[in-house]
Amino acid sequence: MRRSKEDAEQTRRSILDAAEELFCSQGVAASTLEKISRRAGVTRGALYWHFKDKSDLMEALHKRSRPVQVTLMETAAETGHEDPLGFLETAGIEMLVTFEQDERQQRMFLIMNSHSPDEEGAAWVQRVNADLFRTLSSLIRRAEANGSLSPDFSPEEAGVITLATMQGLLHEWLRSGKGFPLAGLGAKLMVRQIAMLRHGAPKPRGAPG
Image (tube, rainbow, N blue to C red; front, top):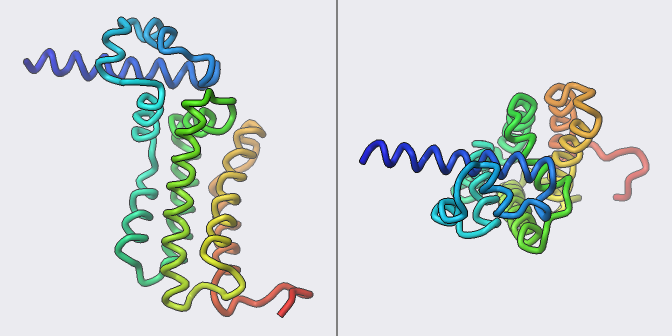
């Protein structure tokens, strides 16, 4: 029984590795389940035993490369934190450090952002991005509630700024062939950005109000 369970786990890992490789090199739309099963060296039946469809595969890939900081942000958004913006700054910097070192996270980012997905994949990516934005907005809403968020920004606006900054950094770092220190530059940017979002931050010269 133990050997069978180990074999099943190995088959599952082989399917995920094959899907990750094909999604990253050929794009989601071009990577059929038939191609994935052949690359993994398993039958279509074995693939369907583990995964019901392409969205299920993408969800499993995302789960195994998901930064632990996202889970921590979800918990802080749900249960509260004494300094939500400070927590967001720390978590964001830690995510950049991890991303710079983790090739699996890098491949997952490319899968989600660099290839035109099919309808099934596009719907999944949209759902994942929407979930992340809701988590960010909920966490920042905690800062609004305790008075630490600048009144110049709504939680949703601050969420857009934060998400766009992180996504932009990751995209440009990969596009440039990792041509700059992601964590080093990202940390500087995150510190200044969170300072801008805090209540009482000095207004830029010429800003209204």
